[in-house]
Image (cartoon, rainbow, N blue to C red; front, side, top):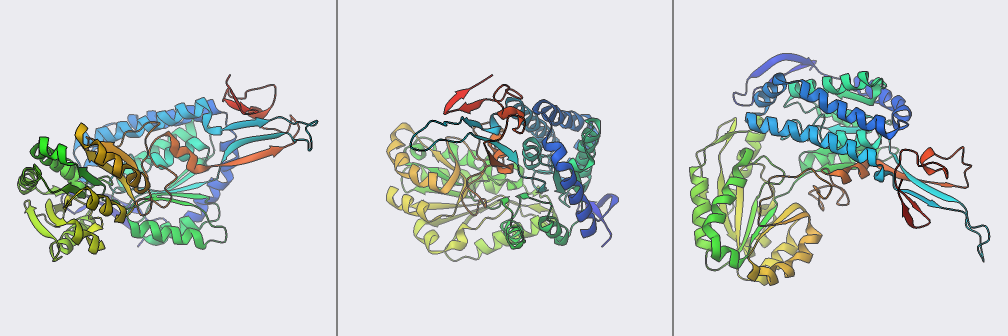
Length: 509
């Protein structure tokens, strides 16, 4: 294949002009440019790097209506979602600009020499974090802006000082191309080397494989399926020089409705649950695909309200025909499972749409069949009924790693919540109370990650300012002269004003 077309999500038909498919040879050129640009880009002062990130945000906003039109046509998502995601994309770029300016991410540490210390003297030791090198970013299908060409992986890598090579998602090539043009313009206007940002397009896995295996690439950011993330991880580990893959993959995000909350507002929670389940056709990595409840008062009201909401739900356009087909297959697999009861189904979907479906089972059956816990990417969920709090805790011990866990509770439920909290801490990246997991705030305290298979590295996050740490590594300098030290580690200067830990004491400019 030498070219491919964008597909309008609602019709499944080709849309817009054809795109030339990049080749492995193009990958090699792009990665070589990124490698050549690395030392120049990472040497920028913090203010210049921060201003560059803000310039990208300005250029994205300047794209105006054509970007919104491309987004809605290629994704099938509504205009409000497009505008909101554009705001989030620009907001996280500006957040990282602020992170860069403050310089805390450098983690500057100075332990001055102690030549007279007994029994052994201490050498002069100084430390800073430096960028790892060029980063490969894979655009996500379900967030054409916030997790794609200029999304969180790209923003955090550029903030760290790493050039970025993006493989745009083939489901939204027009949207990705517009964003790439905006970033490329920001690179040129800032007078930076062309290799600071490169954009590749094409539907084949060969292109992504070549990108991960290129020796110039030092880390990978990925959001997508478990199969895709694991395939890239295997390629990265098989290299002559293995590299980390920060892959966000699959999650079903359990929602715990504790007894007193169920008793007090079971029907209202059931209704609200359906709103979260069906948001964006269920195509959120934080979609509530599992509800855990304990037998008791209010459960019937919750089930009735949730069933009614699902039954009334209209099918929604899904991102691609492939995703719609995978969703239909996942639902069919659950429906055919003898241990699962289908309790509600909305209007049926089509080759481009997906309809909501709700299932129910017991904790005993769920624990005996791992297939019930597999992610179904769309508006499908399973209600699991537990006999008591002990069985609830046992079930939680048996689930896979997740991005989120939600607890709906009243004050009288606190004892149960406290009992399961340590388990949830081991299983998920974000625990929330009396809310819904669909919605990830871009801020400093956010974690969008979790134990495998939610991600390949539970120590990191792909959303929030902590995401910058994925693309940094520490370097220690021992007994270097002042002239050889990085400016921010010299005695007489604070460099860009970043805080420093001097002999264990925090010092700010």
